[in-house]
Length: 338
Ligand code: PHE
Image 1: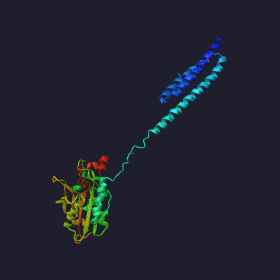
Image 2: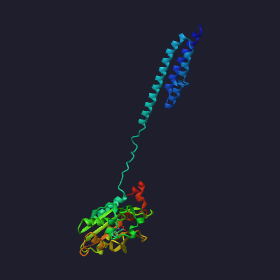
Image 3: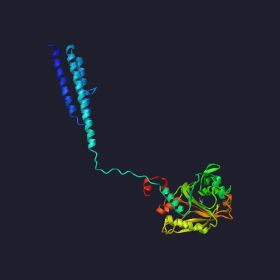
Image 4: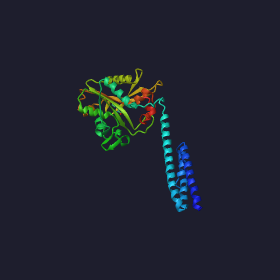
């Protein structure tokens, strides 16, 4: 007997053993990790048992090599198939497990609805209240020229209110409006008395931000020009408005003040809470005859009142908010409450 006679059968036996062991390992692999381990053990290209078996091929003498080579190829293919079958079994098992794990009785995640910003809600309510009092809505641009923001409002060239430090100038002749009074001029230049409008929107002033100040806030401006409009009309209009928006028990007071575009002028305060603290709600007054003249209304025939109120403060008083900053921070926990 040649050495080939003895080595070939044992080499072939080894191949059969490899096939049996491999199949068993693939069939018993319970998850992807176990399968991968079995794949490396049997089919691994570097150290797998199939690799070792392939190396045996080179050691066999010519006649045995052919038989071994054929069987080797068959075993290798069979192991690859067993591995692939196991992979499919494990993957589909996982999929069916995942389907089974959907619990149809679990309550769904409730969708979160968006809502209108508290300032938007306030603005709409103010428009509504003044609408019922006969005021229609007017608009003006946020980037204004110095004519509408100052000149026509009787604020002359070297007036401190025009200081670059107190305004956001865009160019020497334009700025982010510092007050909604600009809209008074735009309306009066277009209409004839009687004029009864409110205008509201953003105004900008370079104030340091704190609990009661912001570089941008919102105002509502009112203007009423007709024959025989008096200070008594102004006071009753604002009182009636305050009761409508803040409640019947609100107390409003008027303090003498000064604005270049009204004469006389007042500051309007509202009582903030039970402690008796007063907070300024805005400014108001009788439209200055110079302003009426500038827009072509005859001050001998017509008179009018105007007011400008801070919308944030009204909303804060109404809802008991003591800091202006949350209005601009878009924190859902704050917005969610309105
Ligand atoms: N524009 C003034 C301000 O911003 C308020 C005001 C409006 C005063 C109308 C009088 C008349 O403070």
